[in-house]
Length: 586
Ligand code: C2E
Ligand code: CA
Ligand code: CA
Image 1 (cartoon, rainbow, N blue to C red):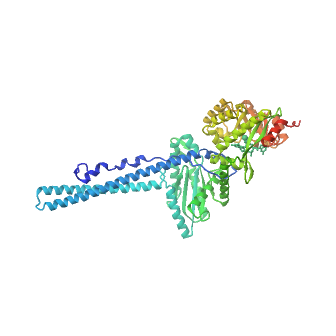
Image 2: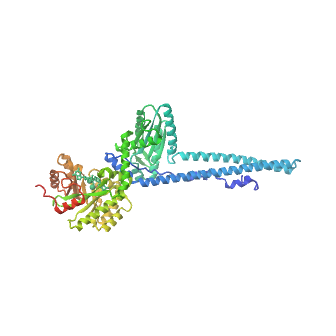
Image 3: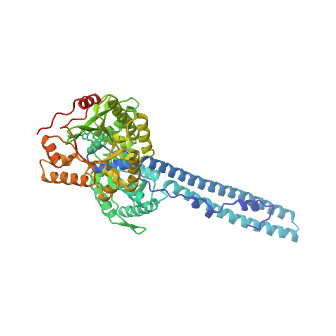
């Protein structure tokens, strides 16, 4: 091409031709292994609740990553489109060049009837241009085709795993539904979500996370038939379409095969990784007539698999969807509750077991729902956490409780420490400590009269950053209590290291102290451990005089529970503070 005649159209094309190896391939971006987080039905399993909180903690971050991924893919696709356009342009030039060369040849033949040497040379030259241009045009056509194939593939596959993406799944699912409907057959859709993938991503980094996702994708593909479709939905979520099943139970067998295959450890960058998966299954036609419904219901069933202890599969049931609708309506209501001032705080007294005096109160939120009446935190806190609404709600609770404590002080009531519950999402949120500092400043509450209650799992999730935050709180002079102590996993060495003030023994242990020797032993041991670490020990859920007597005998510092007083509105608590508690039985 390079030595083509300068006047010819062919020669003009050459310098601007795109080289395919410089093209979009180099600019493809690897999609991060982000794990999507979102709503989960109201469920009983504590572990699932914890998991749900963890999921919500990164919901917005993940949504941002997904948006980023989508933008990168769009960029890649547009690059490819550009290349294809440029190649097409080149092809058009070449065609013009060929036509021009052909014309020139004709002219030469006409002009050179006498067959002079000069004319013959021109004819040969024109001919050689024609051949070169034809070869070039052919090459360009091939490049256009290759770019088009690449573009089509990219649009319908996941960049990281090369599995089909949602777009391709939707096509295949629509076809499979149409076929199953015509043939009166069933099909199954599985929604898979890796268990605790976020821990791997967070602790070992996205590169390890991404490699793990690629290995998982390979194992999944190996588990199913070639007629089935394994698709990556995004993050650590996969969907499998079993296009043709005889019986519903067949989907269960496939799910079990996947669970067994995935449980074998993975080796990535010298790390041995254990990953399990939770699977939800929906069946056409019983659980949905269209693609969206089948995916949504399989997703709902997957969350029930998580709630049932993970590493298992669940078939969709109608009741699951009722729970999901219920959750949605709570979430919608929560969004308006703050603006409409529908939240109220109740206060429960904490008693010094030796002096029998109220030394603190715990602020416990209630929602005065316009239709449902007074709702307890169990009805809405986990949804507030999942949706991120816990952040503005938490800020409201802190301000309201701090102002209330000041109102009591100014009314001349005995000073009490005010305890505020703090969710995982709040603790890790940007500006968390700064908001506390500002609230204290604005309400005038002394920092030593504020205590934050944090659960063990929140503190232990990322011990290093917890330690950092706890030191910032200690510098501020704010107290910290470990709530529900005994229900999570605490590392004793961290417990010693963290600047905390109080251990709050969970009510499940207190419940047992007078009926179960093990319960009594646990409370006794935790009390003496707390005291040896110089911590204040408080028992929650004290309901009977016997429980109180046991705690006093164990030298437990404080007690909280229905025996001393239920959570109550601020006026009632003020009256109790004024009057004091009745003398304990001897
Ligand atoms: P928690 O922090 O463990 O609070 C103690 C719970 O035990 C409260 O339930 C309280 O009413 C209840 N309780 C107190 N004494 C007794 C007793 O003697 N027997 C029994 N059976 N229960 C007792 P509540 O108010 O329903 O709150 C439930 C949970 O909701 C709280 O558990 C806390 O984790 C969360 N929560 C409450 N308010 C807030 C808040 O403002 N922010 C956040 N993030 N969470 C909150
Ligand atoms: Ca608490
Ligand atoms: Ca508690």
